[in-house]
Image (cartoon, rainbow, N blue to C red; front, side, top):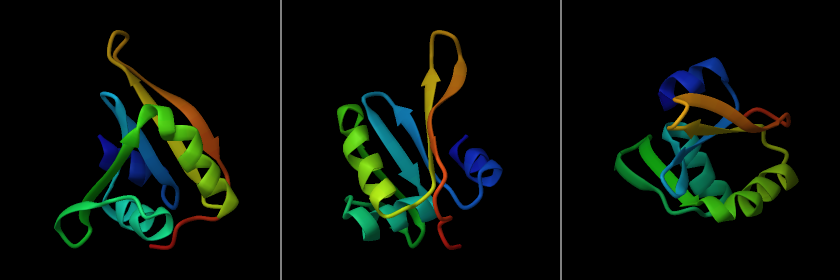
Amino acid sequence: MMELLQKKNQGKIIFCNAGYFYIAIGKDAVLLNNLLELKASCIKPEVCKVGFPINSLEKYTELLIQKRYSYIVYYFDQEKEELQILEDYEGKNRKE
């Protein structure tokens, strides 16, 4: 699912909830590791993920806004089986 969201929103950093965390994968994870020093777990180069607790969302999105990076925060409501956009910030696109 995350890969489809990245293709749909090319150039933006994509976050999606996974339980009590928000995660980012692939090139987004590598960028966030470099920009915000979030710890990345990598199987091989660019096959990575980073995450942070849901209650830290504002902290990390504020840092991205300060650095002017575009991002979208998605929330998957399991009860409604629906994907919702919580935040959508237009800044500069991440470089491919």
